[in-house]
Image 1 (cartoon, rainbow, N blue to C red):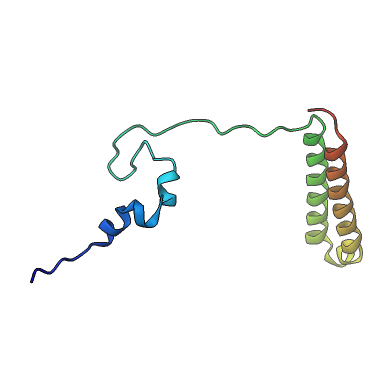
Image 2 (image 1 turned 180 degrees about the horizontal axis):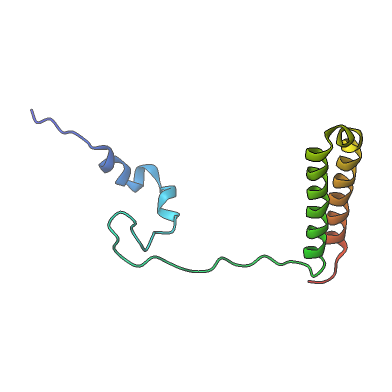
Amino acid sequence: MKKTSTKLKDMLNEHYILGELPSSKLMKMKWNPLTGKGTPKNEASPKMKVYSWEKNFNDAQKNLDTAANIMSMKSSGGYNNVKKDVMKVQKALNMLRSKMKMNSTEF
């Protein structure tokens, strides 16, 4: 009696049982980092659209954060008195940014 052993790889290759494997739909790498064969792909990622006003808005938010951090380090007692107000302003700015993006007709 002959013993037949089936390897896992052989079982996975049987498409008629399992159907199409999800890994077969993935893009194949053109460069193997282990062997160094092929050429690495140096493509720039697509740039996100940024509204003309958005950079200034982000800078304003960063300035508020910087001011709050400096105050928390230099005057922690005073910062504790205004901490909730700073958080309210940050939340209001985030809401404003989202409404501005929804209502902007720039793109």
